[in-house]
Length: 598
Image 1 (spheres, rainbow, N blue to C red):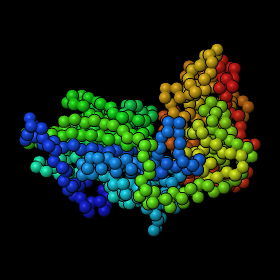
Image 2: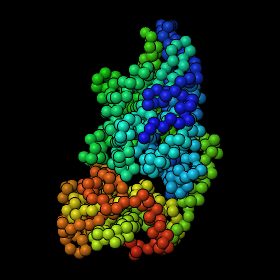
Image 3: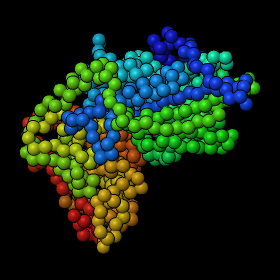
Image 4: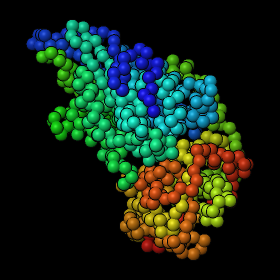
């Protein structure tokens, strides 16, 4: 996959496999203190966002209303644009950079619409709303996120071609040549009156988990080595090319943890490791983890120097500012200090230029998601779905079962029982009684996952369920039950807890993890460990997401590229009426020493 040399290179100079941009407007000279006459100073501000996930406006497409939460946050690039304009006014535009750390083109009905309904890849297709917004705001460079690959390489390349800035990925390599498939870095020169220019390098790193989570798209085409390894390769090169400042934009959290299991030898959340292990980095814009880190200082093990990390909250709720002070002394620029802070997008209004630019695209998607596809006989909700078998999750598993059964009809596997997994993705999703719209169903299944059929044995499914049951906090039989403290043991997110339909079982939360599944049966009889089943499973889980046992290595019988949420909409449309009697079943319950919790 050759390096993409697009329109932004027409106004810049390519250096190696990266992008070098020269000629930033002259910065005002800093007035030296009497004791420092002869020493020039320069102040640079690097702004950063991450995990935008298609949020242009402060709008909740699933609720058809302005976004609101208990913390009073606001979302959207339109707000970020206002903050960016303020910073540029304060600091001087010629003294600023604007970066992003990835996960841009997936996450809302807006991004889904322009990937699937009116795709940017179509002949004469539209410009992606995120490209339009980010071009207008003036982003300098954006690191690739793992969700950039959710719609395939063609969509990503089309989005890349529509951007006026490079998409960086030093550890996204062509599988055949092992050379970068995207620009690894971006360089920009800032002119300082009376002193040599300041050269700033931005290294982009993405998440090795792409090889697992989007295996269907990238296998045989791209490889994703570890962040630490690639940073150690590129940072010295950037320094040798004259970089006075090195900033890393990393789509990787700072915790040092992974959800890969033993599937790849790399760390998922490696940003702090990079800071600790690789000399020569001044600051790291952190992404992927969806947590807020105003400022984290990490000491490099080899140099003893401090590296400053910051992660702004996702969905354009925060803007990171790295304030970097440099001094010119003994013939070279040196970074004297780095600090990081956050600005909150709830303190400003939307930028009217972004509103004007994208209001039509927004209105189109609002109309799309409000299409009525059926009627519900009663209200269905996910409020208790984490700890009770909820009919609304059974809807997902029933749809998946039906699709896989139809796909395997006439094959050698047609006689095998089909069961399905699903997770309680949202704690607030609701399908109200009455008209059911696309947005109602989309709020139930918020990810763009597709469906896979895997061949599993009874013993493997038993282990799978035991692993899933680790989600619950061990609770003694005589202890009070607080549902707010009952789940997410060890920090496991809701999307890594699975229901499995078609089997009946108890989860005894009084027992330690690993020995909680009781009374496991199929079709009224105890489960036979040797019996074969077809598990209808989403592609994230099928490829190893969440590190559930056996499923990633299990034989794949069938897969497709249609999103599960689309299959749910098709199923409801075909039925016309959404009635729990057509899909609900009681498959599992929580117990303590055999007594039901609820």
